[in-house]
Image 1 (cartoon, rainbow, N blue to C red):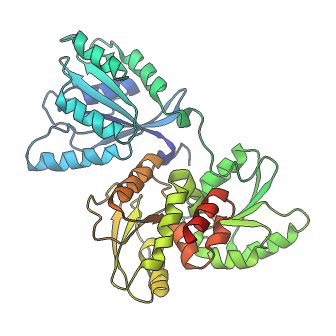
Image 2 (tube, rainbow, N blue to C red):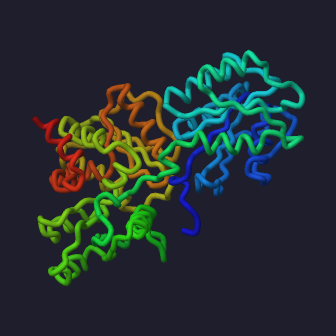
Length: 410
């Protein structure tokens, strides 16, 4: 991992009508030829992503979207792809030209603000037609920052970069931690890392790497072992035991058996349930597993598009464990990447992966979508701990999550 993962970057979505200059603007902001530019409307057919370092924010991901006023059957597919970007946008840029800001732009603004996403308005091609004063007054009254730009004359680009920095969510200026509040500086964590077919040769998987880096950033210590070496490692540490043991969820039972009860124990996936989503909501969703019946439909939502192996956690192991718990076969649908169904009425439960390859905004958007429709949602690690009967122990490091569960059980 030589650069920040896409999932940890601030996702900046660029929206607007066709041919207002979104791609040209992105090229100007990044100072690179990222997106194809043409006078022909609809040149951008799919979202174009550009990762870069954008100081002082740090790592960001610009997303150049297709014009959402596209027409025709192919245009409808482009619009659908663009609308998916709303759910993972953490800072929205709405681009217009010829000084226009009407119902169309307001519609995009409402989509973003409904998700509590900060917005910047950009009036591009201001050398041809500046933004009307009444429009600027209205935006200012609504608290929407705006910038007038002309890519041809390199006007307003610096001002736009400054507006992006000012509007970035505070969490990206003062970034949160995965484990820093659990393992204070000078304390020790033991990370249990099974080496299986899911881990590319010579590498660890993303959550493991990010946890190691987070501990180092926090001036904490960590020891990394495989599951069969954990018992021996803990014996060597008897005089100075670790604060916590973190395991891959697939090795939960063995690790729980080998870890003394006085040592905290959880999984990478549960850490990411808190880091990338809403742990309390996932705890509540896991409690709904007890209500499942044979024949019920469950949605598996994976944020990456990895090639599944024979014993894939989402497609094989979790369905098998859940069938054993329920005492009958369940029906599973799998969605990968940014795909997520609008209609969830047929599902009794949604199982979100750890989310290491997406950003928190997208996971929170999925949680909110499920909440509105009354469909419980949980994540892999939280669900596995519940099914295997070690729920309370796996939640013990997180006082809030454990209290939330106990209140729900009353």
